[in-house]
Image (cartoon, rainbow, N blue to C red; front, side, top):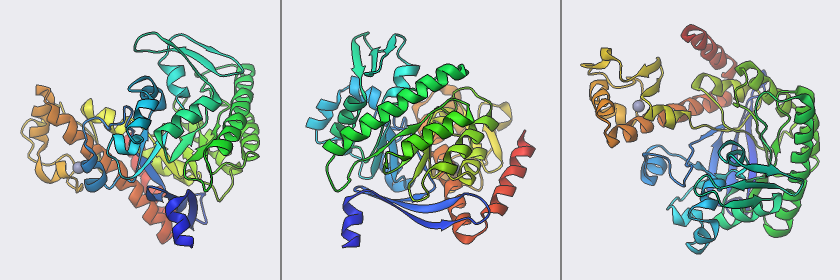
Length: 384
Ligand SMILES: [Zn+2]
């Protein structure tokens, strides 16, 4: 009975907790498989992780959950078209779990013309200027049409910095939107929970507003919670502080997702503050720009020093790219603008992120996370 329910519905199970930090290891069960946490989720904005196919992701890299962007898929090809194609999993031929954002972040970052009201947000498509409206209810409907395993509630992600007055007004609206979204989701998503909805904590960089928001959202008794509004230009120590004050209040037995973070050295820092899930475009975007993450620090592949370097990007990496290709060859592909470069570099950078998360999880389970964190901090200090 228990196994059956795990396979068909959403649930979160804690496996180990670090006694000295807030780090936890868990298992996130969704109808599309079980995800060991802490987890890093690669970003597939347009239902595609740029440069990689689904076999690379699922079989070679072992990715259990991907992120896709509601805003982009809503505009093109449209959630209704995707629903008619059997849902996003079938449309993109992805067997594992999918998390979608609510579209709010893109509305605020991409769409130049937008109007926020109590009802929702009116915006103009960055593709053709057409006017659209997202409401807390409609973004749930769009994500249910996509068939996401984890949905995000509509929120407003204020830019940085904003006044305290605006941060509070915006945060309170986000809370009201979350309540409407959760209410709509409870009535439409059905039971048992196959499509979990996470409200998003906002409050800009004001710790007390973050706490006020978190308490209000916890009252909604959602299946999980996201920490949004980070990585919007604030100094890194502030992002970590905001994640920390939020995670302290979030219920222990629910998964916590820090949106849009972070650099490799920061992953363990977020985990130490109680975060279970993260996503970031950095590994894939930086790969395409020639910036590679390795166990020995960064490699800027265009540098002349790699012109005849026969070593792999990272001698300690087991990825396909590192097992077959030299820095010299990758540098040549990069400088020649070859498509193959993006595919090989992205594969490596994602492997690096997944390896780090694997090491973190192992450290938590084996009781050595504080030592692991110390090593990461020492290496980060050296790199600066
Ligand atoms: Zn590699």
